[in-house]
Image (cartoon, rainbow, N blue to C red; front, side, top):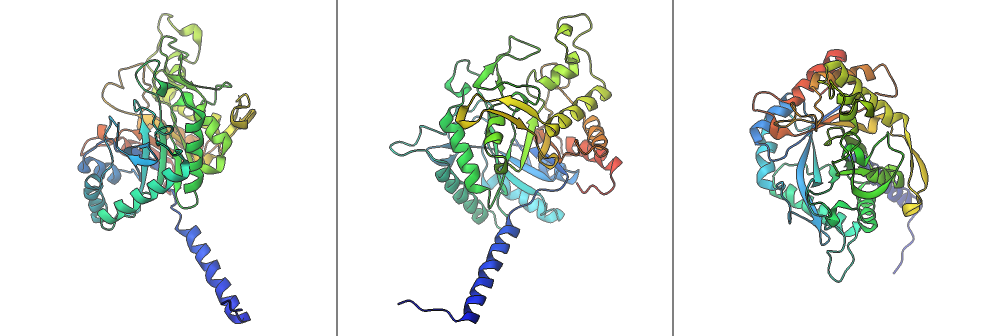
Length: 392
């Protein structure tokens, strides 16, 4: 039996629907205006909590994988995210009065085989099914860690593997489509970030292909670079990604080429090169990469997935520079090292330049911090030094 609503009842019903819609929008998680983020990578609760105390305000829990339309730990070689790991950190954050810290779930990691597509038996693997699995995983985590607000969203970190010639060193269209569909399915309620190695989203590279085994500019014998594969994802759906965090610490990265060889191929193999970088060198490279991403760059995608030539320019608030610290990095020319003070100085210079006023930094990895000192603290000190209003 149908019933016609009276005019007052109809207006009340519409008002309730409008209020519900507003509430939904307001409940979508929000990232800090200025962001200092770290990847947990099996760090102890004590170390994670000290890192937050010293300035980290976004935690990327690493890692989970996707296979058979499920969020899973199968095949992971770098650990997984469980309630047992989150519970003591959450309790510590509550005790510190830091429930403002944002939690993100990172998917993938280096040297994890790609099983996103083609692993679902008689049914198709789909972004919608993976999104539903994430929602369930998140709800279970909230249930199992009392008071935990849940993950604010997901972070795409699917990369290549060590085995040369592996199928996982080549992206497939079906995998890319699943990433896009899952991001689109979640973005109304969750944040979505990507953290590509620099060659996967290279503002100095006009070319594109699906391979993750291209040669590095500074070291042609190193064949684990990409050509703008993640830039394609952004070109297809800019609204799907809240932040783009470029790993300028990628092995033999273009940033490292600029830092240690001044960006000149003629310096490769010449006497005095690679150089030992100064703080000024480091700061200049970080700032240049921020400007490059915001000013934009052209890529020819060759019509793949319907994308031809495209100009990609990131809003400054979406740009986060990814930095790397772990044992051995400081003495290696393979992985460019940037001090927290030099990166912070670049950020400060960016405050005077609308093209470089980026959101902040993320670093790998918190597990290389200690219970008393952290890279986040170095960044925080430098960034607060030029902007007292920064709340990190």
